[in-house]
Length: 498
Image 1 (cartoon, helix red, strand yellow):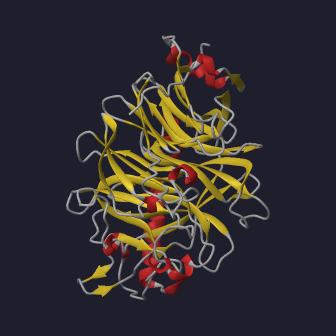
Image 2: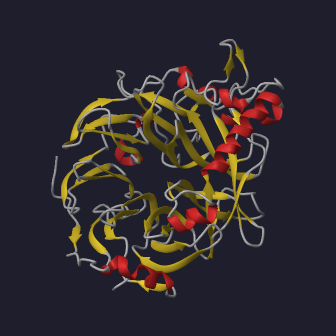
């Protein structure tokens, strides 16, 4: 292990006594250009960016319960204390494990998964994009120690998005839920590519998966350009949710954004269901491509405008318009919007998708997933079959269902000239505040006033590189961690009195 790869700065913090007393004044003012120095508490700059700027980027970060911060980068892992002082680094580029005869130093190991393993003490799961997508279990207190390695094909390659979370299973054991993009480079049979898996954290080797704990792409989808771009995952009331953009279906050329889910307590993942999320602009145009999302509470003002109890969970998402005609490309443009969805609407959409697949037949099946089927049991109601699509332990009612009608929302904020890349929210008094990262390294601070309006009130330049999807905020300390491709920043969330 080495400890000399240090490039960090610490900024002495000014207390923000009285901050909460002037939130209303701050939000009522016109948009201003904020100065990062008024917010920054500490930062760490990528020491490899001078060497190979094309490849040496940060990918993910995570926090441990004891206050340390971990960053997964191309070919490196870093461990910091709460002041972002580097404690340790470890290489993930092992030349003894060639991929296709090419050493890691020439292929670059992109970090795809970085999560603290809550099922065992002092363990960190880290997965890379080389060596067939293998994961490693490392020690939280010494990240150079590799305690065990996983089965192959857990994570995706350089351009293959991967999202994951640790959640419960039917027997109360925790599992790692993973969604990964198939790119054609993944080392696995095209007819048997598991797009979504529920993986065992206690198996040997770790993260092994049984067939019933996987949702497989069809051979036809693996053989054509059917790329799924996953942006995030979260869990809610017994389900694990995934948010992604991809073609509407196997034979479609139209790109849409979808939210899908698997039941955590189901005996298998056959009840996988997906519905389309639509975010429309004020002129009726559609922002086709979801870029990031955050599942969190609605502040009192936002909740009241929807008739919800304060702190009721909602889904916040940022979308972009695509290049060319609407929905015809997977490439986003610098034209973004913020949409918010009630979970009651999303849950109703999933129930309707299952109802349609049970009662109305083939229109509700998912052609790009292997083995998807629907039926026509007109008198069977969906509520009892959202987790296990089998009646009387024998009759399969459906396998993999999709909704036909989108869950729609009208944009609260539209920003021409900006590509939003991340989102997280916080509540100050009655206000819901969204923090939006951009592809040009800015942090936008937005007051979500109600379910129809939001206002950008401050723009802070963090870096010249894109802000990544990983962001955290501590509502008690009002401190944030924000990751760009080259910098990890710890900062105050608000500083209206600057």
